[in-house]
Amino acid sequence: MAPHKFSFEGIFDLERKHHEDIIERKPLKHILEGRRIRFVNPKGRFDFCYFGDFYFDTGNVMMLITNDLNYTWYHRSDQMSNTLWSTVPVIFAGVETGVKDDAGNEIFTYDFCDLGRNRLMVQYLSSDEPCLMGDNHSVPLSWAKEHGGFKKSGTALYDLRKEMFEIFNPWEIWRVNQFNDAEEREKAHNALKAPVFVDGLPAPNKRWHRTYLNIDDVMDDDVVLVYFRSSDKETIPDEDGELLEHYVCYIDNYPHCEVKQEYEMVVDHENYQQLLYELMLKAHRTPEKCFVLCDFFENIVIFDKCRKIFAHYFKPMIEYYIQNIVLPKWIMEELIKEVV
Image (cartoon, rainbow, N blue to C red; front, side, top):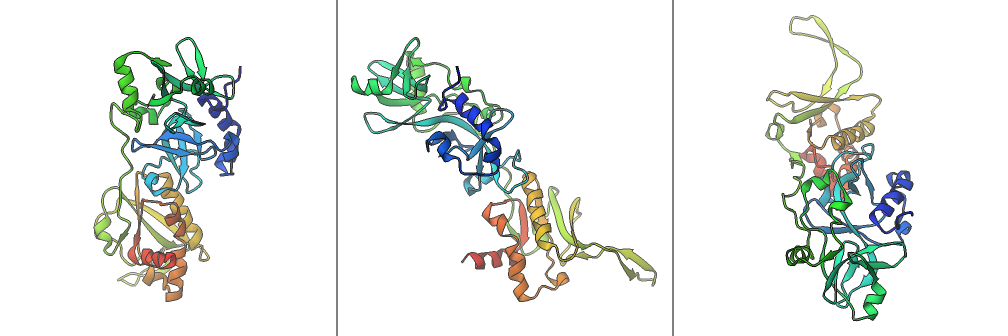
């Protein structure tokens, strides 16, 4: 029997069926009838999204597709590394049922509800109606509402481990259907408003400076120095008059410290916009590294009107909150003017 579409297995199958459309960011909210998907974010809180806003990676982990500043610090380069969207590992935590309990609380799968003296988990079986699952029976929510009512009293999102952001097994959440043990009932109740982790949470990517006035202030061993250079070699005499061939680097402010890593952007027919977009992709694919752009204002001779054009090339970095590129301060100032 095929899994119900509102179960984890059903949603997993639907994601595989629509995977290419999800990667292409097509609107797919209707696939699950506009139901919200609940997840646990890397900060250990509940949040919500819709079908089409996530996919499952090779470890069955739900990967949120986002450009939300609250999440881009947790970006892990994955299947959308050819875009500037952030892909963030989160923990699947149920789907909206469209039913409320007697107190008006919205019910999701993986919630526990009290029905009489029993505390039962909400899940979907074969019918389109969510049920309260007992050890050897199930009760449709409509029947429960008509026969004394029920109240949301907890969630199964307790005793979570941070490795669930790396490898996900839904059976680690769906441990039991019916809680009779007092200690287990208390654990489920404690996870009513927020999930409970037993071993901490994943650390966000390192935070870097966004801009600089003095490039030496933002240099360290982990930094990749970025600069423009010419595509063809030029012949320039040295101190002794001997002619030497070398590429021209358009750098106003090469740092005084030792530079261990460099990234060159080769200028060919003023292809600055393409070069800078490739830089943003490179940085986004390697969120553990910091890329510091050397200033080029004097060397490329940018007139005032061109400052705005160059700054505009960095607009995707702001729209998608690319966090690990450090810019000369004037570029950010021009971007702020554009936004205002």
